[in-house]
Length: 190
Image 1 (cartoon, rainbow, N blue to C red):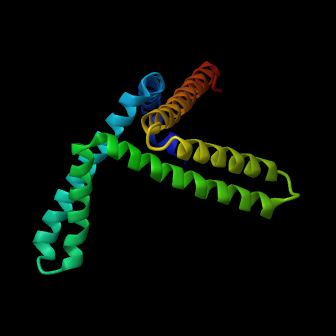
Image 2: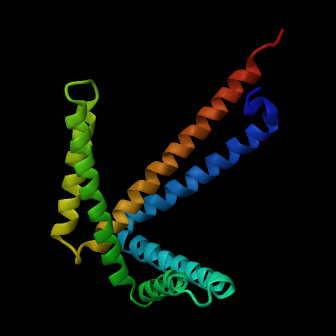
């Protein structure tokens, strides 16, 4: 018995409605990020700073409860709170730091893409890995050339485009679920 059969059509219908709404919201946030990359970059950095600070406080409480005398037990909360507070106090520096981390990730992704293309050559699909490597390298070099001055633009666009496509994907998935449900409800069962 499949998950859909266990949970029934009401569960699927509720999921379909929420996924359409969530996809629309995420897509709209992504579009906003593309139109206002500076705002998106600073917002993301502040959110990341708050998350790191809160995580550090929670880990600090855990260390207080269970590792009061262990330096290594306190290292993680101290680093999280310190970096989180620094990002909150200077969001522009946080934007530059996060952009540099994404640039390093793109360089590593490019290397992996080239490696996978080389490993797969001449089998079908090797060209897609090569294309991924070229695009990742291009983005990494582009981000590094203007760093840190262009960090808010690149980071905001990177997040905005990612969220836009995530939202579109979720919305299209929800539409597919809706079409499948309509197709199934239109069928006459014997």
